[in-house]
Length: 418
Picture (tube, rainbow, N blue to C red):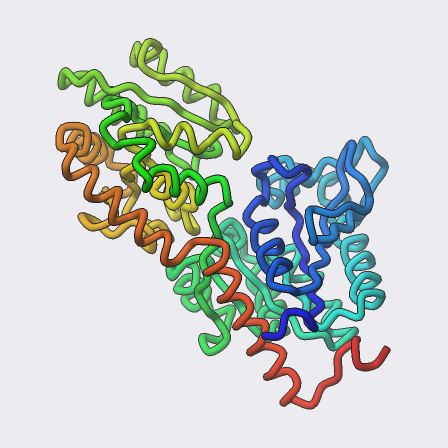
């Protein structure tokens, strides 16, 4: 792709509100990496309190749309949007307004920027908006799925027909993991020939920590030998309760393992009660949500990082941890198996099996040579596949293929019509 002549409008209902905001950070990483390669990147994202309508993150231009009065702009940046929308009629009305204003803003920016390509993150709402804008402007559309939007297809009957419309309009579809591609095909909403796997990138903070770790400044032996780390939004799907169960089993076996949990969410109160019920207050610490720049130091010092989610779309936390030199354990589920190859780049355990998880943690805490080998293998695996430059190159190829196929179809885009 000749990025210098490629004008892309990216659609996202979640996008960082500041450079250190972890929400949607991977979307900014993709946009910024493509902008560095020379593409003109415009991002359409929702407005929220204290945000500017127009701003720039480096070479990435961000256009935020208002969808209600300031005090009612509560859909975005509050967690999983479709779960929030399901809670009441007022939120459903807000969601309708959200989609309408999202569409109007996207249509305006596509026309004014003379865009050559639309790239929607998540098939809903961004993919739906992109499909409608593409239909009207004839600008080709790429749709990327991330996990929560695919999981919604599994649970919501009305979503299937809408998704089929979006994916039929998309010229190219990308998924963050092999698992997500398999799910789209199994659900019958997308054509296999147009679905490609491209992972999300890790942020530069973790790549920088990887350089430090490889240089030996943070030696593996300096890690806190009994520290287990979890980094996750505290929802049921993340299954942090199973990790606490596993810790209780380890303590019963005489282990001195400690657990740090980074993240926040609706399950935090229940998890804190679980810790009290097991009398684990002295060996479990809840740190809450931390800025992305604070995470590398925690990854770099833990003995093992665990992601116990069920049907995780990708599990980027695992790639971050590996780049910081931490050995990892993950559920044998979802997209995490693209990162963790059991016995090679980490250890896997069956979904919601606390005893198997306890066994895996104990194995790595007691065998430092194995832990170091898995961590080194995992870091090399991530460097080959999950850096910004590698992911941006794959998206550049997708953009090139999409534009070429679009040109061969004989359809003119907004940039050609003026």
